[in-house]
Amino acid sequence: MSQSLSNEQLIGIANEYGTPVYVYHAEKITEQYQKLQQAFKQSNAKIFYASKALTNINILKHIRSLGCNIDCSSVNEIHLAIRAGFEPASILYTSNGIAFSEIEEAVSLGVNVNIDSLSNLEKFGKKFGHSYPVGIRLRPNIMAGGNLKISTGHEKSKFGIPIEQIDKILALVQENNLFICGLHVHTGSEIKDVSVFMQVADIFFELAPHFPELSYLDLGGGFKVPYQEGETGTDVSLLGEKVAGVLNKLKETYKRDFEAWFEPGKFLVSEAGYFITEVNVLKQSGSIIFAGVNSGFNHLIRPMFYEAYHRIQNISNPNAPTQLYTITGNICETDTFASDRALNEVREGDRLVFYNAGAYGFEMGSNYNARFKPAQVLVSKGKSHLIGRRDIFEDLLRNQVEVL
Ligand code: LLP
Image: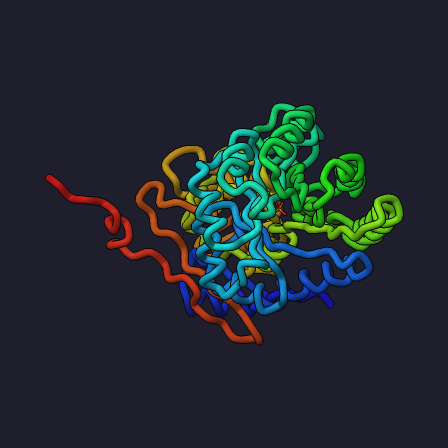
């Protein structure tokens, strides 16, 4: 049975820690990791958790305890990973548009690095030559992903070195005697269609002979998870089978072994997260009923930023008849979480839960309108632990320098 937290548990947490509050469920993360292990058993693919989804140190420690590796998108994320106990060999730094000094720092920490521009590849070659194995991030010119903002592989995307520049890559590799150990492509987030990953695998298949020291093929993250009721995510078992087939074909053709790497973020933590808010005000306007909650896009930006759908439930009045509500935040500009949503009758003071809040929820939060960031709670083995305290007033001034 799938792991989830009950309404009673969520109400208990809201009573104990107050709202708004993010709640994470350790066993659900474990379950998701086990699904991947099962799916990639045959191909023995390596999983790197894309930590940008949620970097709370306790979440990182839990994920490390499962035996998972970690993908980072900044040097600070690398330092957090090290703090959580990850070995450098299990850390991957997939960079994009960064200063070369960050790559030098990543090398000094001994982690795996994927480089995403010709200029940094050249600097890397001049500085490290053949002494440090490195991966290349490519842009495959494939449009995929849930919406344009989270599509990263298309021909207008800033990510990766455009595949049509392969001759330039090869020239740089040769000139600088670079040790290319990996090829990387991340086409986007929320990719349901397994064939997108297979298109990338085809590209790797073609390119492999150009890189005699190649050992890993990194297909990025982006597995889709269900956000709406009745929706299905990426069929990771099918993907696992296909990947095993590709690796076998590579072995037969090129007479050597390759590893497949993946960097899922949402798949591991999205469904493990709940965001509990409380209804401040109800306001009727014509046929619309606004339910204004004690949160806003400063806490969960996905609906406003990506028009993302988050399932919402009134856990305080679950058996009441449903009505349509427009759920709004308290930020002083348009701030809509959902329009015309059927919820069990909402009363002021009721708790509304947002599901799929584990990935890119708290992590993309801000203090806009000088509001506090919410508390974070981890439920593990049936017990709740405060893993991030709610801001207090001093936090708003912490980095300010009062000169007047
Ligand atoms: N690898 C790389 C290089 C990435 O850039 C990302 C996500 C991932 C892996 C993990 O993707 P995932 O498995 O989580 O889909 N904030 C957006 C998603 C942006 C993802 C950015 N990169 C959202 O809330 O939908």
